[in-house]
Amino acid sequence: MRLALLDGRAVLLTGENHELFVDVAHRSDRTFSSDPMELLSSWDDLREWAAGLDADAADGEADPAELGPCIPRPQKVFGIGLNYKDHAAEAGLDIPKQPMVFTKFPTCLVGPRADVVLTGEHVDYEVELVVAIGRGGRGIAAKDALDHVAGYCVGQDISDRRAQFADKPPQFSMGKSADTFGPIGPALVTLDEVANPGDLALTCDIGGERLQDGRTSDMVFGVEALVEFLSSTMPLTPGDLIFTGTPAGVGSVRDPRRYLAAGDTLESEIEGLGKLVNACVNEGGN
Image (cartoon, rainbow, N blue to C red; front, top):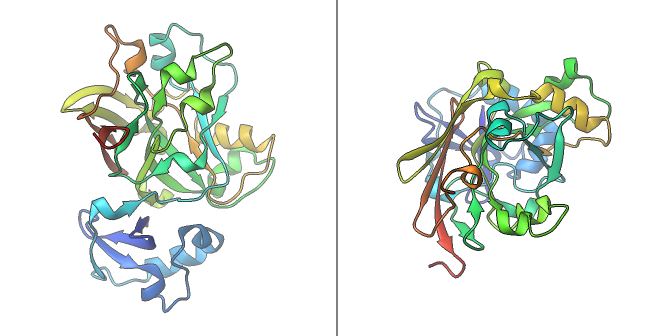
């Protein structure tokens, strides 16, 4: 099942290339809500209903430009720093002994085709696997973690490095939470459609140039370990998002450095989950 937000309403993407949609509330005669956040509370029932839909069911063609963030209003958005071995190596930093956690404020989230509004000349890109919590809990053991995961999507952890490292200690959350600094989507993909989330290819291109090319198997802490670690401190709630870290190739550690500029098109893709395509613009739209 692929849950998306189309023109403000919860839809399931269908079709050979996920180009069609089924309006959840309309097709279910309002058994289910049009709000993706409410659907998480009845996730198992929704999946059972979706499995019974006719394979050719569709209410129309989904315009990618009209897709919003598939999880639009999470209570919490976690980021995990230095969670790929090759990224830690390129940064010249030791591999963490426990997950390095920061937050992205939920207001930064936008859809898979939204513009990224640059806040200066030092804005960086980081393609990431994003985990959405479906069943909440506190003190979740790693062996039970996937029972609490609703699905996965593609994410971009956009960062203003000048704001992030303006002082000591760094201001990770401020540098990573400007408006539009959290594209996610194109849909929330359930676990049964992802063969092995522990070994997925993820890439990031700018203007056709491949800048990041990694696999989730290079993670220091996998999804199960992250859910266990985070839930050991606080309860996870349905809709919480975890940006799980990025592979090597980010702009701030390249030589020469490669930051985003107005006119760039940022393409972020994860095997089996889809692609984000985000145009970079200056504040004011130029």
